[in-house]
Length: 112
Length: 115
Image 1 (tube, chains in turn yellow, orange):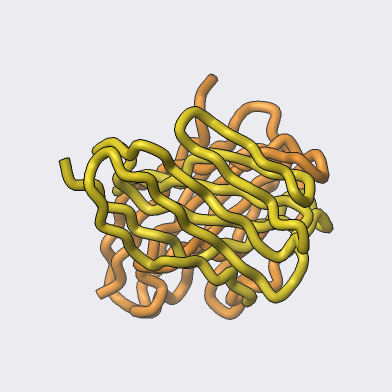
Image 2 (image 1 turned 90 degrees about the vertical axis):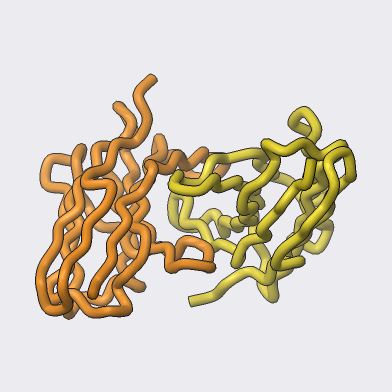
């Protein structure tokens, strides 16, 4: 099945640094979502984007829906240790009540 | 509000044995999903229900996997017989079922190890 291309695969940063990750696809999505997954838990929705060009913030997180509808990025500002986890992008083509296609994930490690 | 409940959390079985996972979605959510997440990968949709009907099962290995949602609430995912490559986390998720702008909530997952 189709997967989204997410990069980078992993990041090791110092506390306080900003983080940026992105997701690209060869096909168009109508909705882009960003999830975080902690060890032993299911993914938790961070930000949902519904319109091309949309820029949305949730606290220290900012995400954008690419103009072409084939990409999205997530920024985390002033990282803290609890930001550690795996971040997934997901796209929804809007044709089947929320069928999501996920990226491979970005593993974020934050050193205090 | 209670989240998506799944059980068991962990299961270890031998290959060729069978296993069943149970999911109780968030109350009032019409759409229920089963995702398979292999270590190091993103979740992959196995099957999607809208109430008690199947919307999408195109990626479900039907020779060994089956799922049902008989009364449109709880759901069971079964694997019989299990193979080594079935080792994964099986995530159940639910949503209200409104097309477009629909938030999907995930359970904690059922971790399967096939030895």
